[in-house]
Image: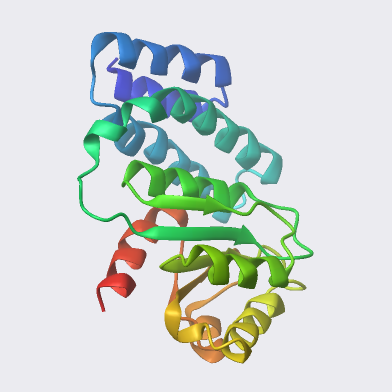
Length: 212
């Protein structure tokens, strides 16, 4: 079995130690780490996402799979730099909104963007809107991506749009929304620039809105 297939299998079996072992082998063998992440770990997470959507598995298993992927990717991260170009990197600020303590989706998005060479500002989970607005003011990211995983917290994405307008910052930054209860219609309703259906689509969506 190739290292790529083994990486996918490790995620599907929630085996963190195996993922670390595989990533160390990738580094030793000189295998392309981007391929292992995109075609191995990411494919595994895609399958996990489908199983979750079909209610074949539940949140604890998704978390285990995400942690497994993270464990493998952390080892490969230092070896990704040579795969990025010298062009100006797009800076993306990521946050799970206030009141929401789930950051699995955000962390998977972060991994996807790291692989593609984006510059990431990770604000973490349960982030107050003031802190997100302050980050836009101080760090001038190209995109702000917010995740809301509960119907009780998606309203914070709309509030963020309003606060950015109040501070005259809305024209300076693109906004991306995501999370289980978040839909494309919701994104349009609140005036966000884009919606990411899943973590895998995030890099492409961000490229589209930053090229407009």
